[in-house]
Image 1 (tube, rainbow, N blue to C red):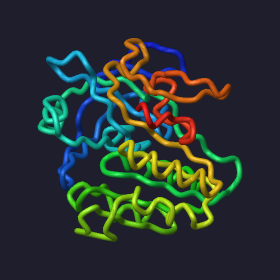
Image 2: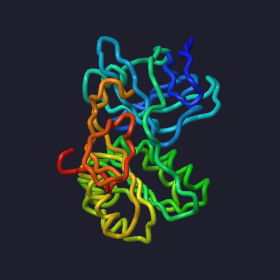
Image 3: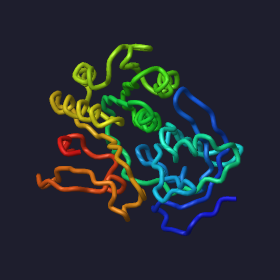
Length: 273
């Protein structure tokens, strides 16, 4: 049933796919979607923008998992936290619902050329891209340590799956309901001090800021997936300003959906974000 708009081989595609599975996982909803052309183009850190009937702005969703083949063909999984009318609508739809989306969008995480020690930090539903990233890094021979954190157990994403994705896993909850008590920001220095070469992070700005700062203090290189509202997801509306410091050391504003969402942690102007 899907219809794909003709584009270049490396461009995002705009498709009408179908919701083929939906399940609740704590405070989140995991949706499995067919979206011809999107799984094939996916790289860890990119996202999809989903249209919601009655709303002009699209909902940007992290891709949690891609399957090259299934009974429905290639599929992708996204994670939805139903907090507003759009995400609540998405989370409430049954199997068989047509879903219009564009993707994959944005810049992915850059992968190291050589095997290095990597620390991946994912907070809440934003931990979703850390799982396919861990898989890509392991394929390159990297030692992967994964941190999954959340305010409480219900917002902890795929903690059991994390143990199959990385050499070591640290679970943090702010309320101490499972794992160690505290946020990733609270433990940032301790985590990064473990002979880490590269730090990857996704989550709220305070977590990203703390992790990026810890990486800089310990001589590690960091990449962060900054989440800001992205009304169109394609760069056309310029509605997702992300303040950064350019390679020329000049302050500027880039579009999170096209020049981001993944940027160097030491390049983000956190004070004005």
